[in-house]
Length: 321
Image 1 (cartoon, one colour):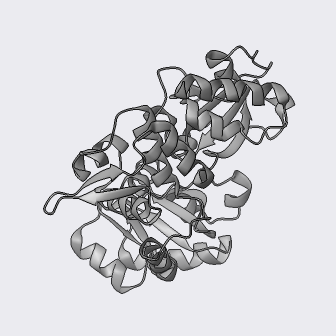
Image 2 (cartoon, rainbow, N blue to C red):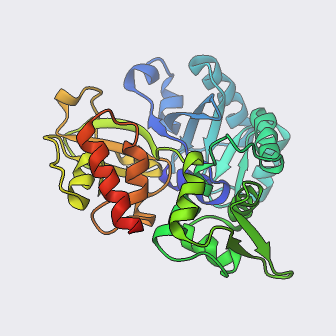
């Protein structure tokens, strides 16, 4: 399932969560359905979905998938999307003819019931972005990367795609959005390159900041940490400034890694760690141990704690002085 989440993120800049369905929700399934699939509950653009990952040993045909998909939809009361590792071209064609939703990571994504939503998504990329609307998280990542890692100016767009771990299509959307927000201009004919209109980093930050958002998607409280976490929250702030960290260490992880999350609790008293899932991978911007300063600022700027506000001012002073 992680492979599918990674495919959606890299190729479409779509980040979703997928949690394995509980035993309670699968207990009413017939044995032949339980044995063929591993189920994950998710949402895409506000629409609930059930991902049914076909197990390697399962014997399925397009006809059987169509029939069992109707059964699963009736039981779970949400559209079903099959996840298949291997799929012959003729079987792919038969699934499409029958209107069966499926995902083959790295190859194809077919969601007939969501075509309207996907069309609306494409339209949002084309229309003129309103100045008071926050920028997308993909565009936010690009701006923060430019400010803190390396300059994205004068780089070919395919190189930017490699740096940000996005597809070329996603980077084209990012560039169009930043251009509409009047943060960049394009140059070149055959090979497009970008130039930020505000050349001073502090000026660019001040211009972009009203359009930027906290990177935090969700917060969980856990007793074990998944891999590839970085210090975040007041734990990270204590590494950059003189503020003392709280009693509960805070960490951040990429949203696409959520399926590896150990059993989580929803109340801080039940967890040793505070774990944030982010809208973009914190490792792309942070150092080996700590999230980056600007994302950290965005994640804490609404805090009512006066100590944190003082430390955040200190953080920006470090960057722009």
